[in-house]
Length: 343
Image (tube, rainbow, N blue to C red; front, side, top):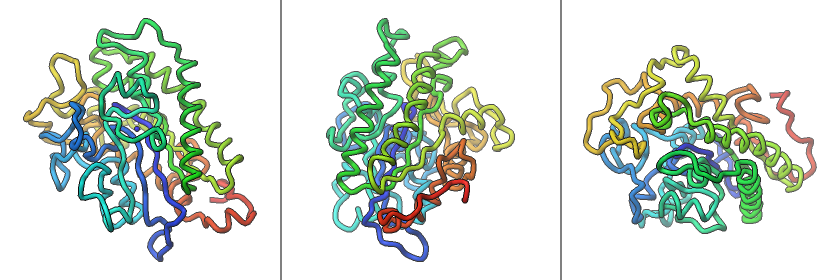
């Protein structure tokens, strides 16, 4: 779910195990961080289907808001899914093409209906399926084109978002979902776009919103796991991981963390790349591709930690690899719950 994000990945309980992987399908909900082309089929200006987006993606600029693969693409590769997930609104997404899952993500998507009205017309899934709490809700309700909104009660907004989010996760559970991967919100107020708007300083109100949401999100997931039999989750500390990468770029092979690789909107009204302009020649040293979306290089580090990190400060209570291999039948027969300290 980013201009920057929280995203939700669901592994259905009807997946059948193979020698290679216990996950045969993944369903992705979110915004532009995991957008893979749904908005191309919609009447909205929130699209990334033009050069220089997709410059390093095998199929080119088909809707991903980065130079290459998104976190959802990369996690699918880690899990051994047979192909990249098709997008929901593609007319070809039907029949056998959906057996490995579907990507529902949409640039500008959010939990609240007000986000749909304020950010874009790109939210396409009904309230029954819109289960990706994300940064767009804070953008829509706490900022204006000229700066911070006059009235923005972050605490009340966060409580509303978490309440709606947990209700929607419960509905997903009722439809059969059992394994959830939730990426929390990054400190996106420090992305190049917002720092340019604030004379080099971070947009504190957006970071405060992210912090409030993240502080409430993990306890909410823990409550669901106690209340809903068989509900299991991984909570990815996107905020902490990206902050670590930005603060120590050399360790991760990066050199540029305050600027964007592509030429962003010179008027500063949008964080996106200007169509047809040439991107930086070496994308591998940049943290951000445009004004708010990271590069595939940063996404790879984030996803690798989500999949295999043993640090609970990065992936809690265990990593995605462990979640993928949890035996669903044992979870429902009263077997002892998995102890992350044993991993």
